[in-house]
Structure formats: C-alpha cells, structure tokens
Length: 324
Ligand code: NDP
Image (cartoon, rainbow, N blue to C red; front, side, top):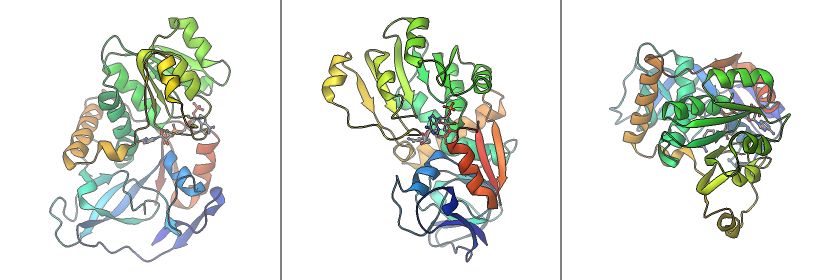
C-alpha cells in the first residue's frame, strides 16, 4: 500500500510517499481501509521531533473508513463497518490502511460523512473535553479561545457558545475573523494586528476571563494568564508557536490563585465509555445541525508535505484531510 513514512525528523520534506507492506491486524486490532485521513497539528510536532517517536514511522493518528478484517478476539467491530478513530498511539494514519486497536474505533452513523467523522475525532473530542470537563463551561463564563478558525478552535467556539459562555476569539487574519464570527464568537480579535490582551481588556475590563483555552503556547500563554479572573484557569493544550517555558507557581498566586493545566486527549478518552460518549455527543450535534465541522481543504495522500507546509504557515482553516 501507499503511505507517508518519516525516516528522519525535520521539515515537511521528510514526509516521503512510499510503498510499504499492508499492515496485518494483530489480536484486538481491526484493519481499516481508509477513505479519509485526518491531519492534526500534533502530526507536525511528531514530524519535527518535538514529540519523540522511534524512527521510521508512518505519521498520522486519525482516520475514517471501512473495516476490512479483524484480528483475534475482536468483538466491537466487524468487516464492513464504517468506523473512525483518533489519537491512536501507534500512529500509522497517513496510509491507505491502518491496523487500529478495535477498542479505539467508533461506528460512524449515517448522515455523517467520513471527512466530517475525522474532524470530530481528535479535534472534536478535544473541543468536547475542554468545554465539558477541563473547565466545565456554563452561562456567565467568559472563555478566551485562540486560533478560533482552526480545527479545534472552530469546534470549541461552537461548543462554548452552546454551553452558554461568552466567547472572545483570536485569529490570524480578517478572513479567519469572519469564520469565527460565523461560529458564534461574541468578540473576535485579529491577534496578528492587535495585542489580544489589550483588546480583551478594552472590551471586557481587567481580569474578565474565566478560562483561557490556549493552543498557541509560547507567544500567547503569559498574556492569556494576565486576563484571568481570580481563581480562573489557563488551559495550555497545544504549542503551535512553541512550548511554554516552566511556570513559577508564585505567578499563579500573584495572578489570583490561578489554575494552570496542560491536558492531553488520551486522558479524556481513556475508557471506552468516555470515547463513545464524546463521539456520540458530537455525531448527534452534527446530525441535528447544531455543530458545523468545516472541511478546510483536502489533499491527495501523496501531498501530505504540502498540507504540513500550509498548516505551519497558518494558511489553513477548519479540518485538513488527506485522501488515499
Ligand atoms: P489548527 O487548525 O488550529 O492550526 C493551528 C493554528 O494555530 C494556525 O492555523 C494558526 O491560526 C495558529 N497559530 C498561532 N501561532 C502559530 C504559529 N507560530 N505557527 C503555526 N500556527 C500558529 O490545528 P489543530 O486544530 O490541529 O490543533 C490546534 C492546537 O490544538 C494545536 O496546538 C494542537 O497541538 C492542539 N491540540 C491539542 C490536543 C490535546 O489534547 N492537548 C488535541 C488536539 C489538538 P491563526 O492564524 O488564526 O493564528
């Protein structure tokens, strides 16, 4: 089969389009013939070596398609089932087929196409746990959401609004601002043109933010923290601009007994119940027209390097899909 292999870490050019043997599903695994492969920012961190993996590997941890075969002991799915998965630790996503632990698969309902199913997996479930569990939002809360036109950001704005929060969204361009407004953000700041902290203070006053969902990291975390109300929470869930340096606990005290967490999805879909509950909430929201998962671009599998270039250059919006 065709796959995108990484033989050494580095820039997008290390994503090589190669022939590799078809994976064979081991005990507990299902072989998925993929129709849509999800690209996520974490694929960049793994490709560059920021997150370490033994080499060589096939990048990507998300896909949707049809079960072609199952290994020993699999009862959750059967050949012919339409399925999707997210965050599989074995990677193997950027390929025509992937052998995935069956317990990580969810059945995709009618009315949700495979590309949208991908969008709801890693990015959708991340937005879900952030809004429901890391900081359970409710009416009256003010939430700051960075990169609000991106994969996670666009879904997080919509879920935060559905939970009743006031949303301050930041984006890189005016075009992205229009998208963020469309998702329901109450205030949209183009942080490439304006200091978002000053703009937020001008809009809502000092220390008006209950929770800052920060996936940008190095460039934004400190200003995100400065906007929090007493006992507010900084949720650093990504590092698109680079990792956050060590944070002095005293800084949290000085800011008003603040909370700082660095969540990761694996801890929020640890049990099969958690995984199925989040997926089912998201599928239902899409089917009922309450949540829009925007497919920003699709690329042929062979063009994975171009997709990474576009993602890192901040040219993309919504979900990026590779088509095998
Ligand atoms: P996005 O579609 O959001 O793409 C990243 C966006 O980040 C860009 O479009 C850009 O938007 C913004 N950005 C700001 N600064 C930079 C920079 N220096 N370089 C590149 N991009 C920058 O990606 P995803 O939806 O896949 O992921 C969003 C974030 O969420 C990532 O940081 C990812 O690691 C994290 N994540 C974390 C998870 C977890 O469980 N902890 C799970 C899933 C994702 P703009 O132009 O508007 O600034």
